[in-house]
Every structure is written in structure tokens, then in C-alpha cells.
Length: 385
Ligand code: ATP
View 1 (cartoon, rainbow, N blue to C red):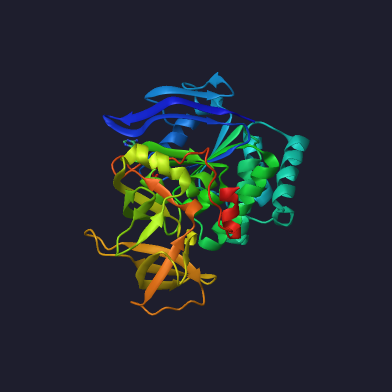
View 2 (cartoon, helix red, strand yellow):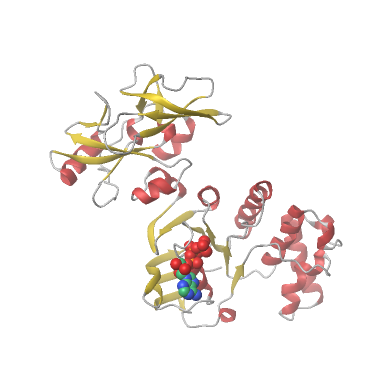
């Protein structure tokens, strides 16, 4: 079991920052995901925790002990790369036992530890097979068992599912999460896949351009992104972000007569950030926009995608600015509107967010004012509770 602390940890290669100073405390048993696009510094951060990469400045503490300059082998941390590399000439059982034997462990103790992970991952029927005779998914389960058997203080995983196809990714994601729930081992997991991060993380550290953008629960980064980068990066598609003009109690949007009321909890913060009137970026998720004949925002259907359980309308709202303003609205799967047809929608007021166009940061609402609640659909409940 382990607590991992990063104190002003940074990494430069020459003069270029791979990781700008990070402060982060990962609590015992937590599953933390480092998420961001390629080259943002996730792997370097993980390698510094493991000791495979030195820090330029800062400190890394493991259970309060300064391990910044310790060799990886002295840190009691297991670094898990992609899982597939099993030894082909060994049985599944010997593959799983290998890390224990390599440490000099023998006989009954090895058998006991192997039996524990075998039970957890339900792979008892595979133990006498060689990897070549196993399906891809079963090979991954054996490889996960081998990674787990050592019971280190913490696991560091760098895109462990990166090489798997979609079907195996989902089942292995569930296996890793199950194992984490049973073992409660502190885990730091790197991925560029925001769906994986949302599904697995207790907390997500969103990184971009060598810098931490936000640290929060999946709900926090999804519903309350700290800035425009996080708003765009999380969600598929990302948050709708359109330029608006704050004018007292409403915000005007592109298109004639299009406007949304400013929820009470945002009125004072917007006045403080923007003055009596000012440009602002309005954000809302596709599922927070509800198509309705009496909706206060009008546009026309630009494209329409069927997603099985729902339909995603791409709605064009006004021509201001160089780029067309396209908003994604999640609508009923049976609502089939021809391209170019007029459509109206409302936005759930408690789901509207505002961003400062200059700083690109979210303008926080006044938490002392209760948000209006408009009978939210099930999946929004957790965000407003
Ligand atoms: P990816 O998902 O592509 O691995 P990442 O977010 O994990 O990306 P890092 O691998 O941590 O990013 O790299 C961060 C930055 O540091 C990149 O610009 C990369 O080119 C640079 N970098 C990483 N390792 C080295 C190195 N050994 N020497 C020089 N630059 C490096």
C-alpha cells in the first residue's frame, strides 16, 4: 500500500519542458489516470515516479519517504508496460510465477500467491497451457496475473491496453478495475483515451503541453472542466463551446434572437469577470441540450448521426465569425430531420458553463446559490446531486 507525493516535480530535456512543475498527492488505494494527447508529458511523469527517469527538480515521496534519487528497484513499485509479452516456452502457471521466482521465492509460498491471483482473475483452467495455445484475451489475463502476483506497493501502468483491439480493451479494462477494487493497490495509469480514463479513474489528471490542466474526479472534469482545453478534450464529441455576449441576465448567442438565460449562480461571477457586458464562451454538453419546438435557440440541421440509442444532431446556429457555429445536440433516435431543416433547442440551465475568452479558464459559479434543477435525466443526476 502506498501514498505517492509529487512536490514541484519537473523535467526538462535541454531547455524544453517535458513536464512543468507538478504538485500531486495520490492517496493510498487510489486509481489515478494521467490523461492527455501524445507528447504532453504523461509517460515522463510516470517514469519519474518509477525512477526510470530522473527529475530535473522537485521531490517524489513514497509513503512519506523521499525516493527521488533511489533506483527503481528500491522503490517497491511495479511498472507495467503493455501486457502481451509472455514467455512462449513456459506454461501459463510458470509465466505467472516467474516474477516471484526471480525474487528468490520458493515452493509453497509461490503456489499460494499464484493461487490467489488465479482465483481473482478466474484463469485456473488455463494454467497448463502455453501462451501460443491461448486466445488473445486469455493471454492478456495471464499477463495481468503475472503483473499482479508480486503485490508491489503501487502499480504504474503505461497504456497497458494500447495494443489490444476494441473488444479485448473493454474486457481488460473491466478486469483491471475489478482487480483494483479487490486489491486496493495504489495505481497510476497512463492513457490518451478519455473514455478509458473516465471508465477507470477515481481521479483524472488532464495534461497538455507539459502542464497539468486539471485534477478531478471523472464527473468534475466532464461537467466542470477547468478550461477550454479540458472541455474540448473530454467527451466524444467534446463540450459545445460557442461565443456569446453576456448582457445582464442573459447571454446572446450567434443567430437572430438566440439567447440563453444566465443561471442565478453565474450572474455575479460573470459581472465580476466581464463587467456589465462582455464576450464570453458558453459551454454545454450535447446531452444537456434538448431539442424542442419551443426551444429558445434556433438553428438548422447541418448533419445528423445515428448512434443506436440516440441521434446526434449537428446544428448550425448563426453565421457570426469566420467559422460556422456548429452545436451538437443529442436527440431522440427516432427524430429524423432532413439536412437544412429548422430545429430549436433549450439547454438545461444547471448544465451551462462559462469560460473567459482571454484566459480560456472556466468562470466558477457562486456555490452559495443553489442551481436551478429541471427534472434532469438519469445520467445527469450524479452531476447535480
Ligand atoms: P505519448 O503518449 O506519445 O508517449 P506522452 O504524453 O507520454 O506522449 P512523453 O513521452 O512524456 O509524452 O513526452 C513529453 C515530451 O518530452 C515530448 O515532447 C517528448 O518528445 C519529450 N521527450 C520524452 N523523452 C525524451 C528524451 N529522452 N529526450 C528528449 N525529449 C524527450
